[in-house]
Image (cartoon, rainbow, N blue to C red; front, side, top):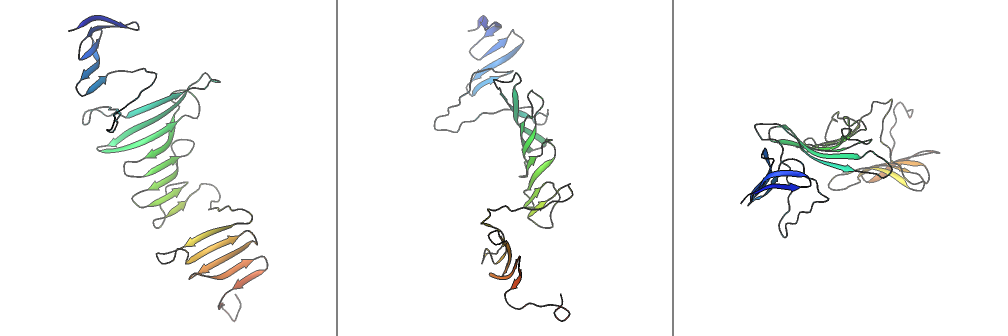
Length: 239
């Protein structure tokens, strides 16, 4: 049976039945069925708890209609700080740039207010991962899943699978920072020996050691060069 003129917090609904609520007889805002509750519009609540017992719990945000409309599914997070009158916004949203492919974005806002959110992290449907620079558009850290390449500061592909460091500044590089009594190492290994080759800098005596075939062969320090084994020079001993 229908109940006419139900008022909930000054919002009048003309029809309330066992299957739904009609908003002033213009459109159904809430529908109850044996599969769940469907809501059209915005739901305001102090909290949301999903308890599925022993089963998996799922919250679904379904946007658009496949093959008919294009729409992103977005979860918007709004936070507040007592010392500011402007709220902070963040988004998690699913973008569908092409049929079947989906990309997940995580956004935050550098300043308060809705609409100022920028990309911070992207999980591409192909498996690529991007961490963005402060502008929210330039990838500062890119993982290419297909080629197994890690790009820092750009997306230019290295010669082979591995790590590339790219910069638009006058110089760029790789830095290893260790304690004053420690050391920095670059290891070269294979399945038989994980450090068969090595470049090592010891801060305790400020020496650099080169290792080949699992043995130290060259040491550079403030006093000179130490070579283990035979050293070959061109032009009768002149370098």
